[in-house]
Image (cartoon, rainbow, N blue to C red; front, top):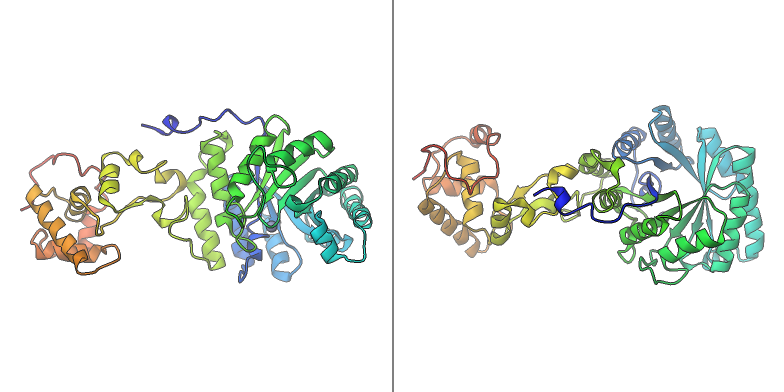
Length: 433
Ligand SMILES: [Zn+2]
């Protein structure tokens, strides 16, 4: 079996999905996050290695400006954009920091417009936004995106007017923002909630040349929404930007995960440019978490420790026979590792595998049965967590399956030469008592 048996089944995309990672902007806005400039530079470099083509940064505080300078100076094979509010002062700050492109954020929903500028009409606000976009694109010569904040609650007639106005003012891309995460991925979901409907309406009724999707995860739909927008853009736009963050970090419940969107684009849609890059996904996310002081939830898809951990008898037996039984793809594809752990539901297959792993020799069926019985007895006494390796070694010693040796020595001797073939017959006479 191989990966082609299960993936690459969707019709090829007729649009180029571009990862525009905002880990260092929206991600850094998550409560309690601070990041050192040198770490930000390492993150940018790793993002570039996994196939990110655009990175979004802040540039207001001194550490952000330092990080921006380090990243711009690295001349990565990746565009770098400064995030701005709709003021000329912010554009000047971006120019001063060395950016050649910016994204200008401005609300499009009446909820936001009225709450933030109660004395101004939507038309007055639109006119000042157009001024700033012209200043950015035409006066300063910056590649300019406009981010329509709270687009999934916007009045379509007003949003459409705004998109056409900023396109005429020089914006090359409009970012659809699902700021509070209530958007929907279904093709029949209506405006302003439905991402596919929004993509189609933008193509049919506006003059903007490119689109971007920025989805929040308040209802858990951020990845599905992002992918639905990519699908909707297929055949309509030559490219579509997806604004994502590592581990989905970001405001409140966070954003669509870079690693999930990227892996779906590769595995399901066969986006070739990610071939050979997915292997660094775990390393990249792990570094982001380490630099930001976050713990990766163990059950997190792709990068979590439990992503490829098997403990129950049925699962470990299946995986030992053929890893495809309980794994969607090999852990190496994303830089993760398979773990087979011992617990209350462990059966003969995993115990046999672990005995071989620890001793380097093949046990008899009788020995396996003895060890299974002992492990079950440990759990019958109320143990909850997985059996630690030292605890398992102690069991083997007590049952005289293992002669006393320092643990480090045992590990060194056996670790490297073992593979998952506990089902195989022993090649030599190394059968234990
Ligand atoms: Zn956001």
